Image (tube, rainbow, N blue to C red; front, side, top):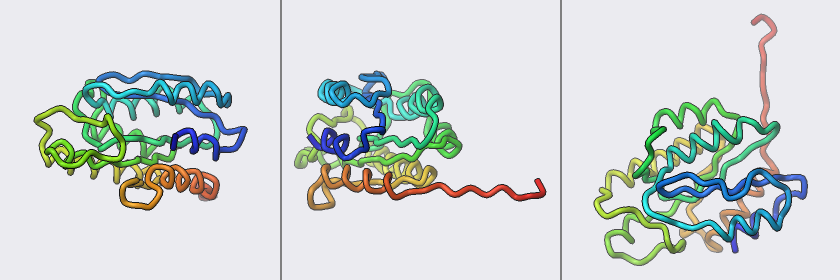
Length: 189
């Protein structure tokens, strides 16, 4: 519902692509402005086993967003813990993100306590395999922070603000409307 509300806040000329990742990376809809297609793809998004986060970031930047002209952003739902990537890594995706012309807005879910038997996060279905260590979660938080910092985005923590996920999406939509890029090229280069 919050993802649909986010799409509803976008301008009619804004296009959206929906990609899910678990042990694999799957495109649920290519870039489109057609809201019914976008909503259908959001409804199909599901959670499986494993998290190929690095592969998903690499795939999105290298094989999809690089073909799109104009302003680009990635909204990423995750706890930051990668468990199954085979083609990309922490450093390679940060380097790629730094060079890409896309903002990254991670929506961070702290699943560490849940995986230890604590209360469930506000986003049901987000699980990591047993055996994930606390230091993996720390690395995941660091990765998301650096990914946002390198690209000019910001990490959102839905459980930390009133309105949760809906407020996070509203904040991202607002930031996308208000951010501008300024470039400088020296005369004697």
